[in-house]
Length: 148
Image 1 (cartoon, helix red, strand yellow):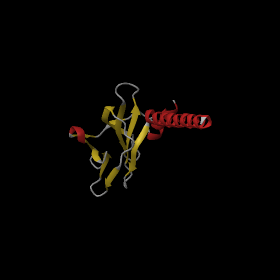
Image 2 (spheres, helix red, strand yellow; image 1 turned 90 degrees about the horizontal axis):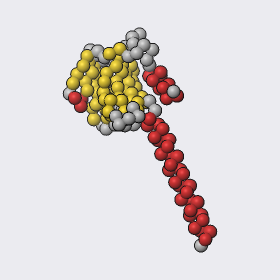
Image 3 (cartoon, one colour; image 1 turned 60 degrees about the vertical axis):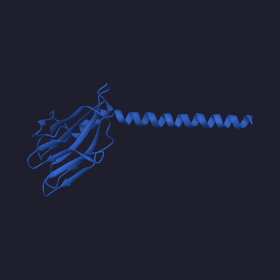
Image 4 (cartoon, one colour; image 1 turned 45 degrees about the horizontal axis):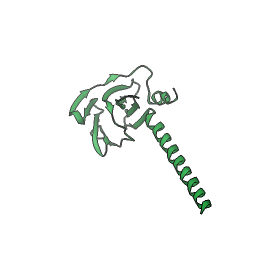
């Protein structure tokens, strides 16, 4: 009986260690800058939804960016007090030149890339032509902030 208890204790400790390690890796991934969705249109317009941890009570900042070929990236606000997104699905309609980014299977952002119209569904607001991002900004540069 005593040997059985020892093996049970070892198994429980191993289980706690494994669960703790998975939790640490999951939290680490959540606090790193990440691209939730990235897509290119048939005519070369690139779009992405990004999220970074604020390390404050305002948990995450989420943004939408796009770039026409040979142009700078342009930015639109989504939320600076956002919750965690694991990813976003994108539906593209090449005929209408519209991309819809989903959150929890619901439209969150609609972008008309022909007119550069950004619709933020939760505010029922449409803005035109995003603000230029910092010079040199790119999704790759954004992700490299993981290492800093």
